[in-house]
Image 1 (cartoon, rainbow, N blue to C red):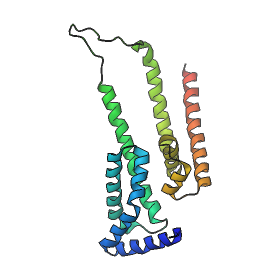
Image 2: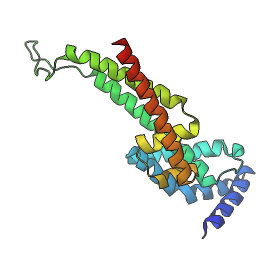
Image 3: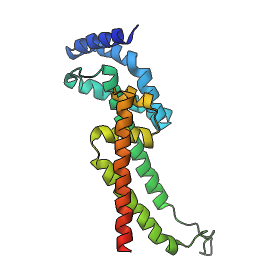
Image 4: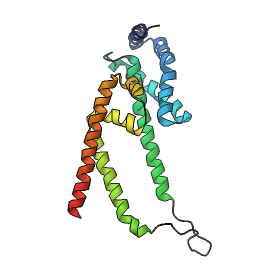
Length: 204
């Protein structure tokens, strides 16, 4: 079946599902479940997370089906929901990992001495860690200020490692458009990093 034929079949199923035909939505799920799961698996590298994201994605799609106007293909719309769910899952995972690392302290012997002395002097690293944290916040702020389309492409390509073809599948945009947005996003972030270092050099 050609791409246009698939899109037309999806449009008919969406129209029926929006009119209350549950079997039509089930047909949409059957048609797109594997690709949604594959995208979530590529982004999270976890079969359990991918399965939950797939379930959440189609639940969200069903809940917002009446808002779907057909400006993009149903596949692109549902894949974008999956990508956003995957990104949220990854951000949550990083927060949890950071919290766990924060709670991990040095081990002590029964006598109360350090079981293993740190290889580096913590006091000498303190200033560097502060600068790293400040740089991270500067990059995060710059990322948050990017237009949505630019931020999405940057996150999918540079943070999650998706190929241009995979990003095109998610966003429904052409590869040249994606490359252009990614280039501009990288320039904006590079400018934010330059400003950060210039500001710290001026302070120093």
